[in-house]
Amino acid sequence: MSESANASVVPFKVGDAPEEESLSRDPAEQLQNPAERLHLAEAVRMAEAIVFASAEPVSEKQLAARLPDGINIALAMAELQQIYARRGVNLVRVGDAWAFRTAGDLAFLMSRDTVQQRKLSRAALEVLAIIAYHQPVTRAEIEDIRGVETSKGTLDTLLETE
Image (cartoon, rainbow, N blue to C red; front, side, top):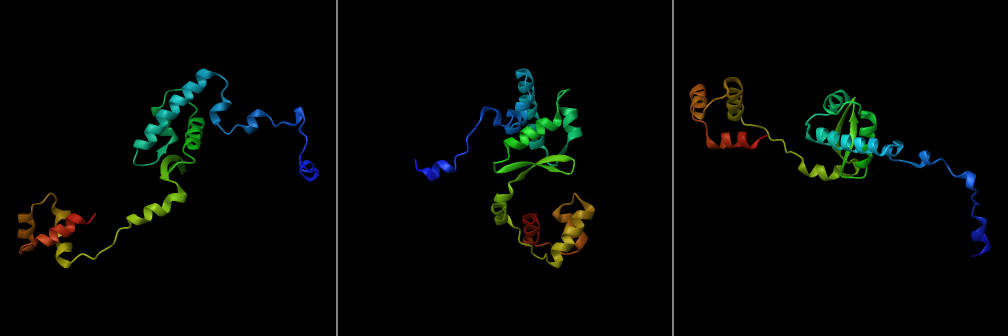
């Protein structure tokens, strides 16, 4: 090795090492007892299932009601958040609740699913108003209320529209 390469090397002394806990990025590593780690791992699995299956963000209060007693919700969610940090979906905090969301760097993939807005015809708006007011309603009832025959195209347009 050349002298200039050696000049940039900093000698390391035994007492200079940072404490192990400060290097740890895994919240579960803070637990010393293997039984506690196993208990936390199972709680993380349960929390993952609850948040994944929910259409709405799940509050910590809801999680506490569903998870076994004695679970540190904050620690379990921090562990789960770390697990999903580099994946296509991330666990994010939404207000005081938790939800899975598409990773920010992959948001461009979702832009392909943009919905084109089309204006509905006057007939389609009339049919839609009748359906909204009289639901459930048959085609014959719609035609009776409107006083004119409803074209198949009008109903198809409404059925295709989300």
